[in-house]
Every structure is written in C-alpha cells, then in structure tokens.
Image (cartoon, rainbow over all chains, first blue to last red):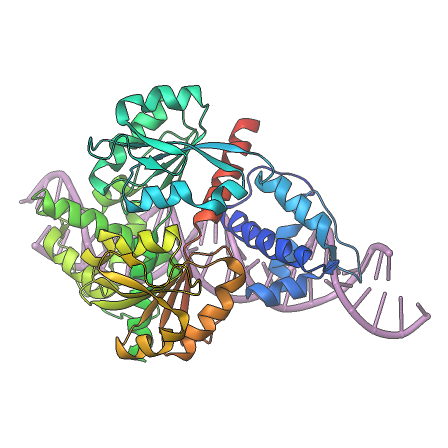
Length: 213
Length: 213
DNA sequence: TAGATTGTTAATCGATTAACAATC
DNA sequence: TAGATTGTTAATCGATTAACAATC
C-alpha cells in the first residue's frame, strides 16, 4: 500500500491532521525520532492504528528506532497537501466570517483569504484587515479571477445552500460549511461541515449522560 | 432499545444534531410529518440508518405516515439536551474568541457566554459585546461563580493544554477545543475538537486527490 | 383492503486492534 | 547478539445497510 495516496478513508485523513500537528510540535522541540507508541500515547490511540495509518504514506519507519520526525512531517505535509497554497473566499461578514478572514493560523498554513463577501449593504465596503467586504454580485467574478479553490460559508443557515450553489457555479472546488445545515453539492465538490454548534450540542449530550451515571 | 438514552455512539450523536437542525427547519415551514426516506434524502444517508438512529429516541414513528415533525423535534431536543441552558466561558480574546463570544447562534441555542479571558494584558479590559475581557487569574473563580459547565478554547496551540488543565481544575465539565492540538483530560471531562484548521487540511487533501483522478 | 412505512433482526461492510514475522 | 519496533496479515469489533414482518 506504500504511497498509494488516493482513496484514504476520511477517518484516516482526520488522524493524519493530528499526526501532522503533533510531529510539527515535536520537530519544533528538536525531537529526532518518534515511535508509533509515543504517537499513540500522545493522541489517545493504539500503536496499531498509528502504524496502519502511517503505512499509507510514502515514507517508512525503521525497526527499533521508529519514524524520523522530520521525514514523517514531510510525508504528512505531502499527503495532506499542506505544502500547497490555496486561494480562499469567505462568504458572510458577520462576527464569525470576519474572525476567520483575520485568523492568522489560516494564512500560516497556506490558506490565503482573497476576499470576503456579504449580501448586507450596510456591511459592504467595511474593512476587514487588508480586505474590503464586497457585494455578493462580485462573488462569481472574484472566484474566477483569484482562482479560489475553497469557499468558507459563514452565513445564516437559510442562505447556506444558495451561496454554496453560487460558489459551485463559479468553479469552487471545496466548501467549508460553518452553518448547522446540510448542503448538497455535486460529487466533484467536497463539502466539509465545521460543526461548531453541533459540537456544542454533542458536549451538551455528553455532559448530561455523564451526570446521569 | 427505546429510550435507552445513554451510551449512544458518537457517530449517532453526530447525526442526531443534523436531524434536529433539519426537523427544526421543517417545523418552521409548517411540515407536519416526515419519513425516514425524506430525512435520508435531505441529508445524504440511507433510510435504514435514519430509522436505526431514531429508534434510540424515546419517541416512535407511525407506520405509513412517518414521524410527526414536532414530536421528533422534541425528542431530539430532549436527547441532545438542547432544552438546557449552559454557562460557557471563552478563553482567548483573539479574533476567533471574540467572534465566538459574540456569535448569536450560541445564545439562541442556550449556550450563554458568561465570560471571556485572556493572558495578554493589552487585551484585558476591552469590551466584547456586553462582556469585558478579564485576566486569566480571574478564570477559576469566574468558572465557579457562574457555574460554567463548558469552556471554549480559542488560544494558541502551545497554551491549549495549560488552559484546559486550569479549566478542569476549576470544575468545568466539557471543553470545545479550537486549537489544532490534542488535549488530554480525565474521563469525566469531555473534550471535543472543533477542527477548523484540520477541516481545511481535509479539504486540501480531497481537492488534490480529486484533481489527480 | 392494499400500500406504505416503521422497528428490528440479520447480513454486510469497513475500521480498529491484536499478533507476529521481518528487521535494524 | 538480543531487544525493540516496524509493516502487514488475520481477527475482532462496531457501524451501516438490507430485508422483512408488524402495523397503521
């Protein structure tokens, strides 16, 4: 399976992002080698799962020593496309949209916000860092001109599908949906739900069932 | 299995939040009955999965008609604890922390932000809506006084575990972690990762593999 | 009644874990 | 060498789907 990069299950991809975050930290601390057991302990997984996951990468560990941290980091960066830079547009200039447009972590990881849009005329023209909030009418052209691949949806649930359709028609390739609403899209477009509110509801459930015990 | 409320798998809980969002919309539109097939089609699932999931609720559908929308909504609200109000503290008064503290959707769903904290003395004292950014030193007492159950972590990755430990020591019951860092906590405390950056990395991977095909 | 839809059991599918030979 | 750790196969576990009797 070595290096067979496509068609990894979503569950594996999700963990690869965790391995990357961890290994970047370790490299920062000057750690040279890391074993599947250490990774597993740090992230609350089994070493079997870690080795199984890492076997999908185009990179091998070494018996008795583990994985070379720098090499593992590069292989994960490679697999996840974390070395690529992406053009991103944010739709919705409310608190959340503006915060995401300003979020330094995104830019540091290569997700460059190229525009922020809103349908509310009172918001259009406002500055958000280096950007200016623009009208939804400009969205399709802006997506094409900036070759934006990713759209972040920070609009009310009722507007989410319509905006998604507009983004998709303009050629966007992936959508990060922050609304607690399901969005349908053609297969060629990936939609990932950020699920912040849903996560709070999950917490709510977990706390209640923990108390019931 | 009817009404056996605890120990539902995480995957089921995740879908219950989607059912709730959908059914709330449907009720708003005046829809009275909904079938497992309709729910499945709306959310991209199979009707089997939907029926299996809903069978965990303390609520039954009716052959030939489906589920009464209002009753289903109430059962989901009940199961997820969406009828409860929660006290929440936000730690980290950067762009993201401030946006979350101001996010209307949270309050509307019963998650009441009771305080926002930061370690940066330049941020302390600033207004965020009706709140004032307070020093981390005030955090433990504020958690106790407001009986906060949930802490939202919007701090840099390097600070996340330390802040989580402080929240936990102060008696918090659940943590929503927005940093791309793993956090360890005792079993009695639930940690859910918001994974916004991780979701972008997943999108990045999905777009690249789609292009490779 | 006939038809449609639930609730549930059984079958399938996929993901995680255990085990161990290979190997450094 | 002896011991530790990988990579991978096989076993287990859990979640999804199919199927269908019960039922309205």
